[in-house]
Amino acid sequence: MKQSTVIHVKRDPEERLRRYAAMVADRAVPLGLVAEGDRDLVWERHVRDCLRATAAFRPEDRVALDLGSGAGLPGIVLACALPDRRFRLVEPRRRAAAFLELAVERLGLTNVEVLIARAQDLEDRADVVTARAFAPLDRTWASAWPLLGPGGRLVYFAGEGMTDPTAHARTIFSPEPPAEVELLERVDSGAPLVIMSRR
Image 1 (tube, rainbow, N blue to C red):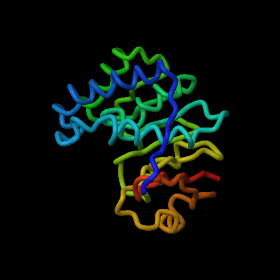
Image 2 (image 1 turned 90 degrees about the vertical axis):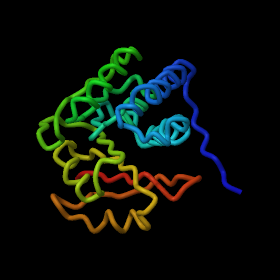
Image 3 (image 1 turned 90 degrees about the horizontal axis):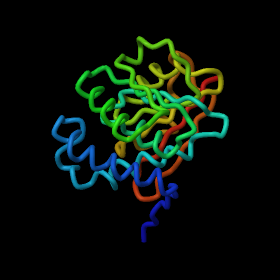
Image 4 (image 1 turned 45 degrees about the horizontal axis):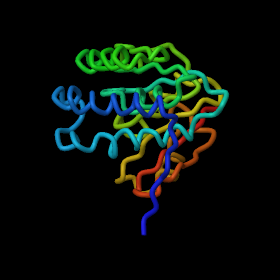
């Protein structure tokens, strides 16, 4: 029998997350930012999935960049769940960025900034970089590496097709190999979070 992951979110963040899930279904799906077939599955397939990344944050982490934020998955979800951290949502598409700005305003998220930019054009530094449906792992690491300070970490949502994420991560040497690779396993699927640290 499969076990389910229990995620505890304080009441106010959960209410905010429910409102966000409704916005995704009502607005992000018609914009093509989330698949039409996921309209009734936003909470289970997207919000709860993104919440797994809260476990990758350390107490000292203050700033996170979410690459290719799209509909705000995971950036807005994490900003709701971790209101004491700053999140910068990186999204080059103006239509997606407009949705993100609307969501930030409607949800009253004072810890979020939307950057209409490509990852390679940024000069920002962050403690954590998140990426979900952004690019293959090697390209994501190459994009995240310059944005991380020493000891900073990439939190990568691996697809279910990645059979051995740890081995795959250890074959990456550009721009430099990760100092450490760890996995946060997902109990109810074969898609873990891959966490790669910069030296």
